[in-house]
Length: 527
Image (cartoon, rainbow, N blue to C red):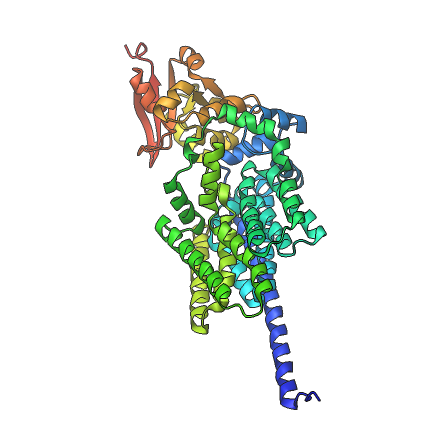
């Protein structure tokens, strides 16, 4: 006869239940606070930060008069993302009046959704308390402090991958597999480089096939269907490759992989590699230890192995993508493999429960300290301008206005400066600001013709004063030249050197910190 539990046992079970419910509720409240803070902080950052070059490109394409014009711009390679991204931006721009917030809001919401998905994923595996800790980790990565408030698709791509993680955790349930395939497909309509994020899932399934002899055809079908947009959008991608054969700033390299880890984790390249390497070794140790100590739970061990492989593959996404990029002759930068940021909290979810209590407290305390220092720095830097927007054109217009010559055109030496300046410039000054392009010369001076080519295309889709130098020079024997790079070192700010080489007189007429304005005259005019 089975012995009935004693009163003390029942009381103990009741206390444990109450404690568990308290932890669950506290973690839910903690997640809500975390997401609310990330939302508010990101909105403040978005509202007070002007667009930079790439974001102005997003603005120009998304604000075309019709969807067919957007398609036409992408056929001409005016920007490098698939059309789905610009349609999302177009919708939000029609709803929110503040353009800095409108174009960044989808990315902010994407980050918040990623945080929630991580919490749900880890809670199922390790419990709510660990889930809350892991959900906070992305806040110390570049996914939060840069890409969550950048009007480019990368935060949305990570959000799609985080939803796919939840689906994969529930594989091979048909409904979840349908959603997983849909999320991969959506991610590829946002960024072509989202295809890199499919690799960890494929490797995890392959590991399951090898160890447990399980062929989950629904998972493979979801991965295959998720890649369909890449085939459908291939004509646009081919145009990108045709116009921009190689991106000098994104050439795959082994040293670049090291820098990617440092950038994503917000630390030095060496520390970034050390952190990810240590986590990977710990996960490998868990796999080896669990396989050596199986006692009648072989099926369960094999089933969980593919999840470990998924985490390892996410941590290893930069070198995996390096190999893929080399094979298909694609570029590789931090933002193309931002899903690596998901691997870190998932690895912590497996490592943290296996540490002793004191080590856990130290790790959590360290995370809280990092967040506190990071956020204190953010709010200190934004103190006094929470409700004030500083246009990048104001200081430029003031400096140019101080030198006189009101009728002269003002050439902006760096194309990367030109787009933000012209976007925020007052109408009278917008007519004066000019950007010069010379593709052969850009290869000589900057070893990079991408920006010049892109500006030539963009002038067909926006009111830009982008001139070919061969057409501009005969009509303007004297003009002003603005440079934001007074100390040198920026390869895209090369027009000063070019003009001096060609015999122009280049004389400083105004300077303010790094900014300089030059009076440029043709040598015939100086005689």
